[in-house]
Image 1 (cartoon, rainbow, N blue to C red):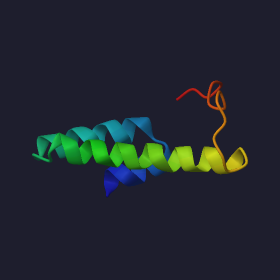
Image 2: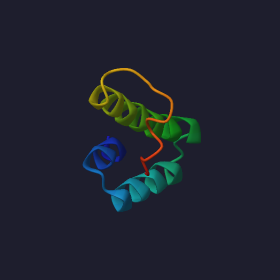
Image 3: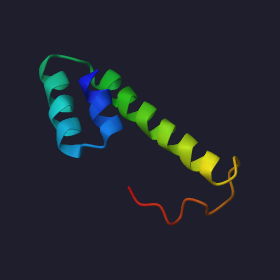
Image 4: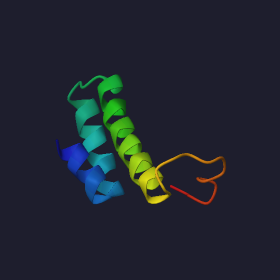
Length: 65
């Protein structure tokens, strides 16, 4: 829960700290990576909706993480 909240808030330091905490607590890497994928999928969904709701080749070329 803390990792997801940190991602939503956009805090890289907190996201890193909570990822390390989860790994140290024995959380499987697959589950930690799924949280990151959810965040990426949500960001992509927002970007696509902002661009008119459909994908066009090259529409993400100017976006840096």
